[in-house]
Length: 259
Image 1 (spheres, rainbow, N blue to C red):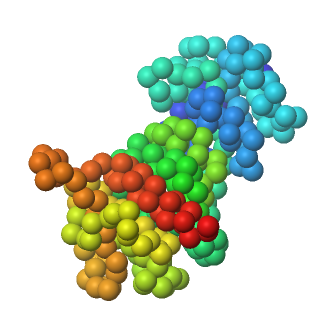
Image 2: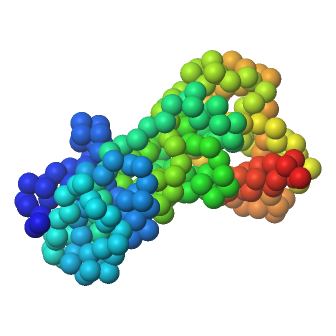
């Protein structure tokens, strides 16, 4: 089935937030992410691919119940958000988890407090997947979890990590204060000896940091920072890098507990 002009316009529109909200769909590009979605329990609306991709990857389309459109290079250029378009695009239904279900897993999760950069959000979702976290909570001011750049940066992990849109007040109503840890420059320095019995790790934007309301409302919240060289010029770490360091510590801490 050939891709029509109307479908081309529709897929391009999903690059905009208002249309993702209207249709509750999103676009994924690239072999890894698209194949992971096709093998997941996400509801697939359609697949658009070049003949060469279909010839080499037909096994990924197992008795499809959705349309599969064939497109040429010009059409792929039109629907892609990438500088170098891939040979395949998947349109899928957005899937959101619930806060209560994710917390019930008793696995660590990240809470992103105003992390606006889509690339950082996607990277943190990928990190959460790598270290076995139970999900990623998207707080106010955080980039849309299904923004094309977020999906791209997850490198397929969007298919395996639940996301929830929530806020500080809703979280605090469902979890004990001692289960939350803030990652902030003013906290105790994280080390190999640090105990990490927390479930929720709150990360803020690099410039602004975590909303002061967390500590103002709950001054007893645990707070950790990532130490560095005394000769450093940098004022802060990239939030994705910080998430990776914390994720590694949490993973190893829980590994030791399980022995």
